Length: 130
Image (cartoon, rainbow, N blue to C red; front, side):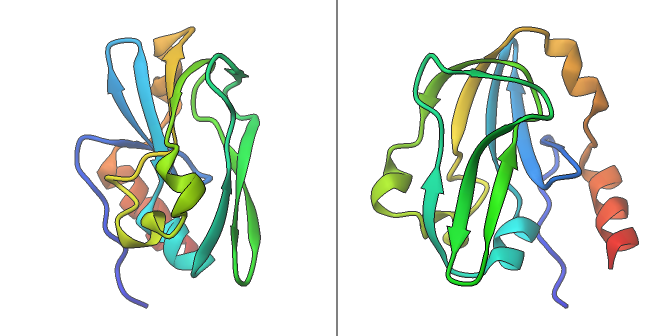
């Protein structure tokens, strides 16, 4: 199995979402491991702006030709933006899961990111799953 790409400076959840934190703003997407596991992504279900998301709770889903997978929010807060490009071209997540984010959230409690893994911890987590 090819090694999944992991980006330094992002935080990672056990459900394979990544988070980029900037103050109280969080940009959320799926990891390279997640998109490789899914295969060819054909649909992304995501919340609308101003929707609330809760840490550890489902906020959407991704469908591929072989599976559907729920998305879990790594943080709690209010959706400030959604990546509308994915409505027309969900396969962007297969091409580059790190530059094609899914939602942006204004966090209620930025300390929640303390439960997430850094790149090294996520790499170890993936190795343990293999």
